[in-house]
Length: 282
Image 1 (cartoon, rainbow, N blue to C red):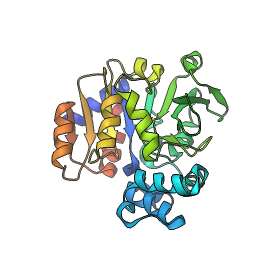
Image 2: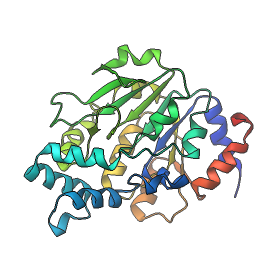
Image 3: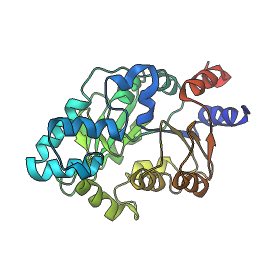
Image 4: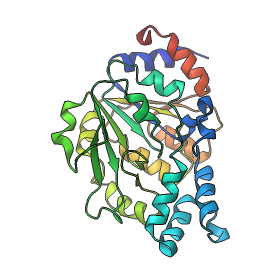
């Protein structure tokens, strides 16, 4: 393993020029995935264990959530999602490592758990911006929350400027307010506008300029995963990295090439061990 990509990542983090982009695969570390769903398949399995859905959508998370929403009300989906992510799982070693970085202007978290919030409590100045469902908050794309979970506004560019770290959760999160983008209708609303960046907070658009993304625990095998990542990294740096030990699909390989995302074939455990050795993180 050539250490130079890790050196480049450590240097970018050290200068405040790297943005962690966290996916559900992060929960594979330290047993966290045994407590909360760590994949689309695990989550749709939880939802369909609570409400029956047609066989053809049983393994499709957004379609299954939409069926439940249509026939058993949106509140049923929200309740099942909250139940799935309410276990007292603790931040993994990678969460802890990342939150020790002295200059961390932005963290993107593309899953529904609250482990980043828990890890961020070691920092003194941070807040959250989360995607919200149009079915529950019509006319609003995101809500901002302070670190104690109190509501900070719809357009908290008036608030985020006082935070040294902004946690962006485009799909929502179990904490503090049970916001979830999960059903087909949730995504249709967002994707209708996302190409012109309307659902992407102005604060995120500003902070990402000139910075590189480091994808951790992410796959790009579904169109939704690729679309969200594509829109979030727009107008950022021309260089990014992904820790991705598994073989890529043809769609993933094309996506990585399109965005100049260098794939580093090592496990997350190896990444934690190697990055922890870097002088910047001691």
